[in-house]
Image 1 (cartoon, each protein chain N blue to C red):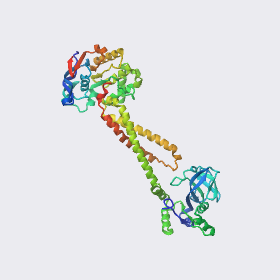
Image 2 (spheres, rainbow over the protein chains, first blue to last red):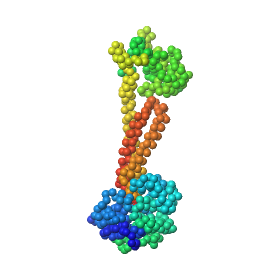
Image 3 (cartoon, helix red, strand yellow):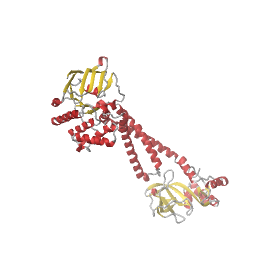
Length: 230
Length: 316
């Protein structure tokens, strides 16, 4: 574990769906802290609650109980403390998906710049930042290509550039290497680690990909909605 | 309200009376009738206008050939009749030579016009009368129709007061007098009003069907993009951005349809049986209606997009 500042602080978080006989407890009294520079993996069998936890940290799903603090701001304490959760996500969180989820009608550069456009950046500054990020991820030579013309690795790097565009300090990744072969999966994880260190960000990854387990600082196991060990 | 909105019948001498009135530069008598004539093995429905050559009431502009030069058995036809210059066609008992062609001359029902001399037109009316009337004519009884016309067209002298002349004709000649603007108003509000309403009804039905089609297309396109919409929501796009994307799609669809429709109608309107006049204002009004239809039609897609859970962007 690094000694950077705490970027994700989840305390006593529970989430259940339904009530009475149909009640399902997806998360039970989960405590989790992730610091700047850390790269952790959420592991567990299907239905263990890892996606639910990722959704709670990503401010997509309201917990039933508990407290969530992101980048020093308490965002949930019995209720959402921010009205505009999309703006909260835009400002604080970057998402990387299993399949890159790039918008097919935009070029690689536009896919990155769209986040900055949403954040209120000017078009010129947004394009410049997108260009810089694509260069940083060594995919700037494909800036004008549409996603359909990118290889799997290139598309995932563009998706990572998009996740980093608005300088979030929390990156949530959902199976980011599932669509990649072993070599490319390793490259992507090395890249994420580099980002975590250089940008003082933390990276929380849901994965089943055993070949990349050794790339994480911590493996957080979930079983029946509880943290099994960390 | 004659001669356009209802039948009219006035003595031929009215033309001389009108021509002598102060402010009138010249006057001409006209009459008209619909007849069916055989041509090239098919039946041709024609709107025969009889006029006095060298007087108002004849064809406005000869597009091909020449105007009528003799007193009898020559005609100038609208192109939509399919007649060609030099051809002949039997009208009544006589065969007429086509000496010229005009464009855009037809009656409110869409029948193409042919111009003949007034005397030929009056004879044609008599020849087409029932047998009993022809017997009377053979006995020497002058037919009422032979000495009557449908209307007199007066061309005003420069600076003459047309309203004053019309009032004078009404007061002293006991005839209806209409200015060109009044005739146009009668045509639009009375004669072609029913056709206009019918077209309006068809337009309403077509727009309703278009709205449903656009709504279904936009809905289908939205359903195909649920993952992209979820991704946009997840990365922080506000609802207005997503709504704008869907409405934009609907508007592009509508604008494309409007553009294609406009090009199509401008290309084929000359082949319509009726004369189609599409003014820029009409096209703009239609664009406005299509805009409203697209906005309304995108509602279904917007509703589907608003229901998308951003969490669906996660996972495969």
